[in-house]
Length: 114
Image (tube, rainbow, N blue to C red; front, side):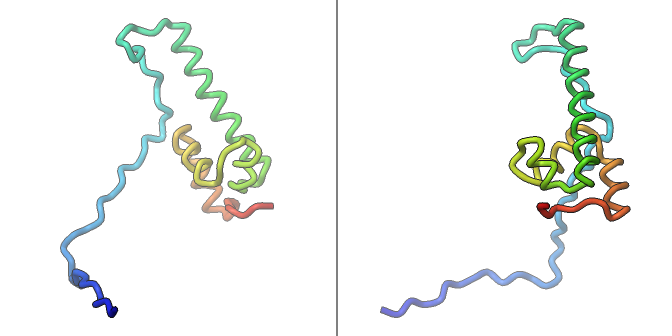
């Protein structure tokens, strides 16, 4: 039995479609939500604890990156993350973009395992 090749739709060379730009994340760390999922307001103690956890996460991530010489794979291994992509996500989520961009511009950022 001979199968005919499947027809594919040709892609125009001068397509007017442009890729959507991803919005740049705000460099400020996200503020804790003032209300719970069920709509009740959070206490001042809870809000302060969440702020402290965010700051502690920033400090831990930054010190681990610096200790590993900005090696993302080694940092992921030290923090128990799946890989370098999770470290990059955490950098963005913790508003460490300026430090990451500076290290990347200086050629310090690597993805290789040690």
